[in-house]
Image 1 (cartoon, rainbow, N blue to C red):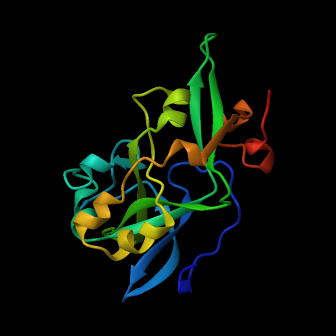
Image 2: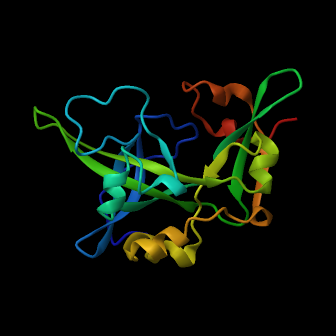
Length: 206
């Protein structure tokens, strides 16, 4: 838990881009829990960001990404707590079957993220976040295929390093989480609609 909790949220089961998610970051050497908009808006942007929001960035591009590179250079790292995520498998019938993927024996785990603060010409402030992805492990690639990545799940021992360590040490923490410590099962295709958001979405089917 963060030292200071400014956040206020309820459990969500189907989070979409541009919605607000909880995140933990460091402010004045203390951890704080805040709500950030999912989809990075870089601080240097003038006017509105065109195109889809940047909801993730590959670990091998955190320093070179035009959208996220400034946040990385500024040490604006954060941890996004979540209970699981979805991966989709293309069936022989060409249907996209969703799977709920989570960590065994952990109700909540932390995913590496970057945040930034954007101010409009009207002085509107949006603090936003993007999660960092890494190569998929055997479990996730077995569902979605080898070309898709997975969120960079942090080991608990790496939380402090990710938030406050030097860039080299922080980058070393970005690794595929071991498949043997994870589990996945098929869930209802209702999750394919952003309107659905209830506990039944993560109930096993089939």
